[in-house]
Length: 370
Image (cartoon, rainbow, N blue to C red; front, side):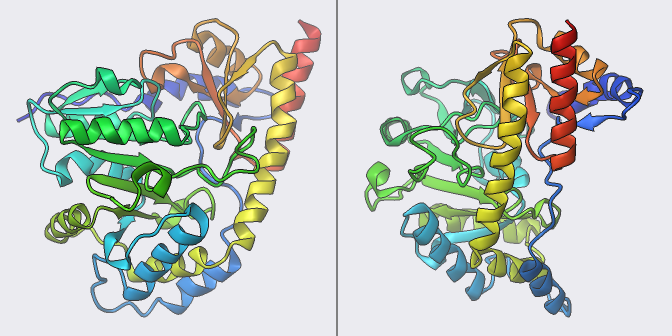
């Protein structure tokens, strides 16, 4: 039996959430990026129409879904993939956490991921007993690396890797004989120049890999762009041999997206209007919350894309979490994202317009009275 797993990090937030709940105006939860806006009507209708799902769904996805994913990659990401080189997943978190297992990694092998990162990358390594290596510098990646995670735009700090950085990462992974996976779930939400007008590059972008997807995968989720977190609707694409490997293991493990969800994914992937509308909602919320934080002396760092504001006042993150809780606002501690962000907190834009406005008001009032 492998060693004990770490505690679930968000459990540490309980006392701060309780403190925030005691605020006279109630708690405003900006700590977790769970969408609050409605799922598109076309998607809900597609889900409802597919509820007579009496047979087992295809682990590989229906032909229609695979084609929709391939078409979406071409249209939105500028990437050519064959419909046979894509695979639906039960959300993206399970793919991240299970990828080392799906690829057959174990002890004496390493999983590399960003220094400031969503904790599931490290957890995936822990689940198979592999070494977890937080590193942003390809030159530092150890020789026993077998899996590399790239997260662009990043959760939590919203940084974007350009074509040159992605190309260098792919080259180093191939030199090591490692699989490299781009987690690109926030790619539709670019805020700062040049990403307001330019497409955020995929790791499968031809400027990065040409037409050679060997050893390279891109993971994507519909949770944020389509408000489908509750559907668990995501997918991965890239190297056909790796997709075949993932498909075989997932068949054995019974990891398959429900048939109604597959039908809903087809509808979501074919409708760009709702994505544009959702992007505008998040842009507006960001423009309300960011100046309030800056007025209170917080410095916004990174945050050029994605659904979060990554801020600091150069105090310990837990002190900032406590200060926000005193205002009835729950935020995420930088300690959750590795040892390299002890003085930052993360605020999500995935709260209602009313909650964002109320949070901004409380922050400004507190700053004015300081």
